[in-house]
Amino acid sequence: MAKTVKKLTRPQMVSLPSVAKQLNRRVAAYARVSTGSEQQQSSIEAQQDYYIKLIDFRPDWTFAGLYIDDGVSGTRTEHREGFNQMIQDALAGKIDLIVTKSISRFARNTVDSLSTIRLLKEHGVEIFFEKENIWTFDSKGELMLTILSSVAQEESRSISENITWGKRKRFADGEYAVAYGRFLGYDRGMIINQTEAVIIKKIYFLFLLGMSSYQISSLLTEQGVPTPGGKKNWSHGVIASILSNEKYKGDALIQKHYTVDFISKKQKKNEGELPKYYVTGGHEAIIPPLLHEYVQTERNRRMAYKHGRYSGVHPFLGRIVCENCGAAYRYSSWHSTTYKGQSQILCNRQKRCK
Image (tube, rainbow, N blue to C red; front, top):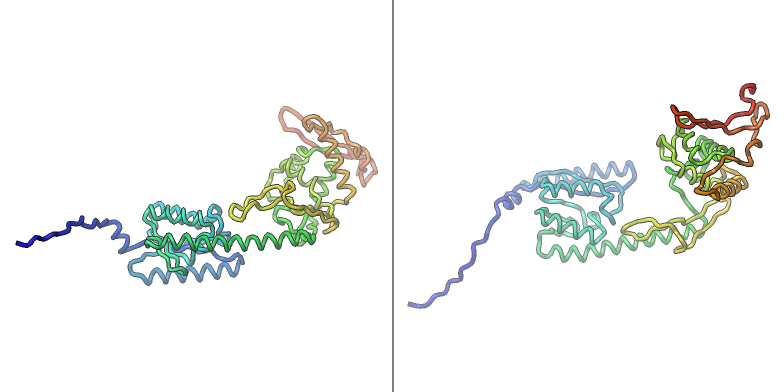
């Protein structure tokens, strides 16, 4: 009888849950859209319609939701609420497959991109990148992702460097902008907001009458004046910042801070690493320059006291007069065991002044 040799191989183990997932996969889509309000809404509706049709076309797919981030950078994942919610749902077992347009839409940071893909892969969640036609469960998928993610990151770096160069060129030319939502007293284009300018002038006026930053912040809070951020409670730090800000006298110190790198986007105080530029008279002043300089001198004088404590004695007391009767203003404060400290600026003839 002839000798025969038969190779014995271990039967392939098939995971029933895995097969079930392949037969009916819960599929979610991820997209990032532009920032313009009308364009953004149109883009959201268009992508939602596209992905619903795409997923419904496949009988083995079930629509598991559309996750969207509007106008945020792809270089970091921590600020993308839609992206992070999608990852949480995927790790919670609510998603089997994620479909997205391209690697650059998913993430432009190679480290974030690959670590997220591997984490999802460990939990049985696959990603399909339409533009590159890459499935992350494919054996060649990770190699291609590493290469293409690196290309996307370099593209993002190049864009960031071009933007930074443009900003620094504008700084050197004396052009500047501010965060309008947080800069009290001015609207877009450094145009004075007359309503807010009254608050700025009041802060300088109270300071020159002898009040400290703590006392001014307490008074504004008590009077219900909204903060630059629209909140109720003022802090002494905000008052100190307003009193020291050169923009209120029409000038601007440019590049006080700079971005450390394009991935972290962390801001660092410029302590000589990059040039600063000082623009004089670049926009209309709310506070006259000489008065602003006097305030800086007075702030330095007060800070010379031990622990920053200030007695309230001020050379302007007695020199600012009431427009009705000509009497000098005085600064008055009182305390009790029942109520917290109260402060007032009063005309010396307040009982007779009409």
